Length: 295
Image (cartoon, rainbow, N blue to C red):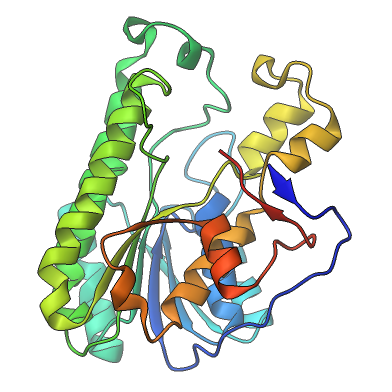
């Protein structure tokens, strides 16, 4: 669904996040990149975390951390390239040791990483789960669940150094009915949503919020390529359908920035917020002037 139309009134007043320190995982491409760039555009210092620095660490995928950091600088923020393999515990320890040495605190943490390789829109998503390759579980849980847990725990002392910080977890939306979503994605969405709720309980006494953010179906490079190459998933979709049913990668970034700047965010802790929810609450649009509500 989409309210408004391309070329409609564009609404976005970047909140002032100058002086804030943020860490965004999975930031070399896709939604993570969009979030990092918007936070930088609001004046934050953003550690862009991933494995791809000068060239992509994933075959067939575009996007490198250096380019994201450069774009953040162009937008007025400070971009810090932070190569980190989130499956390597010592790498994660080094990452937050670096943040501690440089700032002594952390204001915004975005857990966005997932290990999907170059899947595009894999055909096995529409087949019974025994057709799923084993790496699909590993990429979703070893990275897309465990790293969220590991990163948040490792960052906890920095997040709780002073009240007012926020942790965001991104994932698929937890389906209302079992079977609406691929089995592994259903389980990941359910686990991450629960994780956000449980961290909220433990961070609340420290004045730190924990939010499950659902970006919606976003035009990542892989999704855009899938549509351009007429992947079966998009069978019958017109260009108008595609843009009406998807959001830019910066829509979620605007949601994170607006939420992080809200002095009353703690009232929302433990909740699931979609980019569309945030757009309505904080009166902003996507970059094309629409307010998409992609499922």
